[in-house]
Length: 184
Image (cartoon, rainbow, N blue to C red; front, side, top):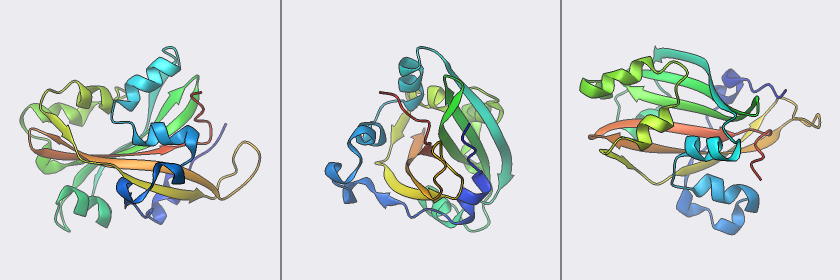
């Protein structure tokens, strides 16, 4: 199984670019539709895995988000957020690494329930919320030092992130598509 070390990923933050800076032809054809899809990734993964989908929580902790995450969310330099890192598994393999940043100021009122998601997918709650809106994606490529299934290192992985607004409270979700991701 592919081991994706999250500390290595975030020891050097990826360079996130607005999705409009990528032409569809610049993205790998097989991945482009997944990277740019505006629907619920959770729903799509459940569908293509025929229900063999689960969330594995890697960590959930309070900390100060990275600089670009704070900027995207309009947070100050000393503002804390709940950082949640998970694998989205299909067919018992990690297909997607997801990192969510939930600013403390967003976890109020009815959104307080997001503090205790456990192994429930955040995507399901986001896409069933009638007060949700989403900003356009940012896309990146990130190299990993971990070997892929063929033993190669420095594999380039595609990722996307966007800011969601739930009743005007921002939440960021980034998703990195891992080498085992093969929905076709």
